[in-house]
Image 1 (cartoon, helix red, strand yellow):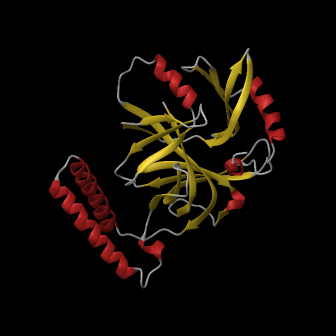
Image 2: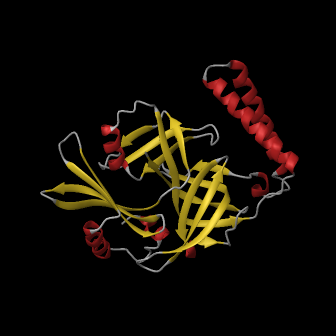
Image 3: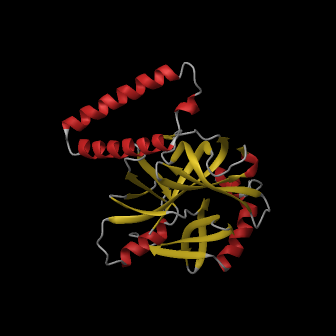
Length: 289
């Protein structure tokens, strides 16, 4: 049983018996359904059943003689902020019929790996598409089992403008360094040394989260899980239609990258509001088109 089931309000679903009951109803009337014939001539399917606005469960399995046999079930929340990216790589996981994708983004500073929510559907779209563009449209989201609300940091308008300029300059340097520009590499090295010196001095008298405004760091052994601190753009309460459990839907922003996060109300400490910050560990997912 996927441990993130509680994030979308299925905290009491700890056995396959209850899950099978929902699957039976979902297979008769799914909210979305896609199938794809793989290289081994097996027909694999992917169907979803919504448990609320934008979140629910997905089943993946094989179709044999018209019968759907599911092998894997996972919870999801669909992202709402789409963006395009070049050089996105898609790879099937060892378990089969489940996919991860990865891309590089200088705003984050790390190679982003996420679980693909609609891998079967996406393969079908790519097979039928005549579009040879190298850009992929995505929307990121995440599920959390714990979280804490942090107060925002106060910045003047002048400081905000300076931060935006510094971020744009750093992205330009990173782009140049990737192409082999030695001066850009040297400038980035000096910047990192300067940041380290300033932080080392401030950490002696200040709390770490008054220094670190946001962060995005790989977490644990799983390649698609991250520890983040991000700004809250919006917060909305929702109810699971099957279990009536209350959950939070948060739209987060990290350096201009938007992530819709879902978690059980019981697991969030503090009251989320626009302008505050969220700190927690998330399972990063993404919808591809």
